[in-house]
Each structure stands twice: as structure tokens, then as C-alpha cells.
Length: 162
Image (cartoon, rainbow, N blue to C red; front, side, top):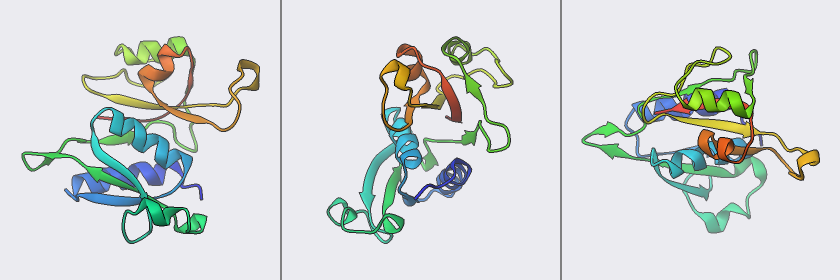
């Protein structure tokens, strides 16, 4: 099941602002990729596979794809969410693709292609397309901005979080 990125990002933003401890997202490569990038940067505390009612990895594989969920646990410090905001960059009407060089400028804080530069502690999630000419087979990969830059890759800038 593919959840559109705008629904995924707005759901994460709303749940984080409401100080909820955890939420369930529909299972997709996008939700797993975005959650993984946020987890690696410490903006959320845990990502678990599960059912629509509770996180349980052992029951996950027995479910049909529409019932599979990715559970995200949020971090809070002094009663405030660690992830203050998450914002969609590439929309379905205006998709934002950048090369490796442009991604580097954005990560260094400079505006490129109408994408404002990264601020302090800000994380970008980039969808790197599968490319058979570069021996990257299979599906698209979701990476954090600096991971994509170090790997020499550009792609679609999905969201930014801080």
C-alpha cells in the first residue's frame, strides 16, 4: 500500500505537535524510509512493524498488505517534542529534483531551486531513484540528505525536519 508523502508528512507533524507517544503509519517504502532517516538523526525514538492496533513485528508478516503498519515512537524532552516540525518540500504538483551539487549547496544553507537552505539541526530526506546504468537495481531508496550527498547522488527532496 502506497501512502502519498503529503499524507505521511502531515500525519507525523500533527501527531508530534499533539504530544502523542506513538502513531501508526500505513506500511510503504516511503513511510519506512522517512521514519528511518528521522530515527538515525534522533528526532524519533523507535520504529517498529506491527498491526493496525499495536506494534508487533511477529504478527506483521501474517497480515495482508493493507493492514500492515509502521509504528513510530516520538521523543519528548521537558514536555516538548524533539521533532518540532516536519515540512513537505516536494509536492505532487511541484516536484523538486536536485543534483548532487545542488543538494550540497542546500545542505550548506544556500537556497537552490526555490528550496531554502538547511538550518541548524535540520534534516532533509531525499528519494534517490533506482538507476540501472549505475548498478542501483530495484526500487527507489530514501536517504538522509548528507547520506545521499556523500554517496554522490541527487534525487527528489521529499521533506525537511527539525
